[in-house]
Length: 294
View (cartoon, helix red, strand yellow):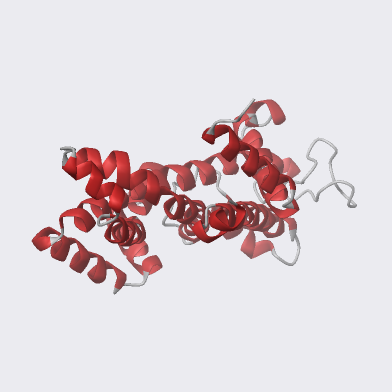
């Protein structure tokens, strides 16, 4: 029985995935972090913000002076490190994914419209993009967060709105290379409207590079969130995040190394897993790779 086109694509992706141990490792890391975030109340009985000064600065098991009730130790206020790590994963993944969805939706929409219609609208949007790119990204985010104040919702909106430029420029470039192709001319010749051409014919053919960029953007957004939280400009201080844990532990680096090492490892491993998945997606969605395998 002959396989359909969709079935052949799925079979090829699974075959490529089986031959890529780094991609499998990246997916495994992402799944583990996501499960830890979702099952945080099940994995630990502690409240991530409740304090207990009688158990402060307990080292991880099995170090001397550790408490079996706190496997990864406690911080300067007696809060369980494991609890704060798994709840911090919620914030990192939420900020990373939702911010990328917002910036991707804004940027791709603008890129499709500017690339297809051109004219004065294209000039205005691209000049706005150039103006935003003239400012260092982290300084721009710091300035905006300092004005509107810390908070999870504010952080997501700032990261989402300021990240649209990359998607807009990429989508615009894809549209410019596709809008004069034969299948687009054929769609015009049978009376297809502009919106149908853009969203039914151009967008599906431009999604590959956009998906790759979005996967890398999730990792960079997680780092941006940790940076802003470290500087006190991210979420509110009572919210457990990896960046906030790094900031709180820097004063105890010599006597309690686990306060900064463990959240730092969580950030590094999560970002590594997402980047490894992004590398694999870049390879399998590269048009040159697809042509070689046909």
